[in-house]
Image 1 (spheres, helix red, strand yellow):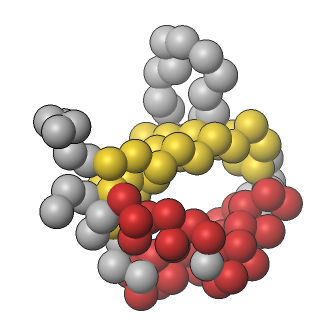
Image 2 (tube, one colour):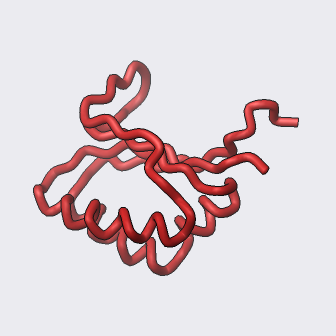
Length: 99
């Protein structure tokens, strides 16, 4: 089964964003996810990107969707919304063959 990924870009607007990061790490691990890559200075070459880019890996696309839809994450995301702007989260299937 192919992995699933969240591709996230956001712009941090408040140092309190650190509270979100601190709470996010144990939560994502509890649902089988992990931070795959993070860049504090991403280069957006098309569209609107943020000043922070993160890729989070999950066991499957369905697991990634369920994690995002969970009540726990929706509550946690309130911290992100309060301390960032221009957030984009895209959930993708890691299978590159698309058969």
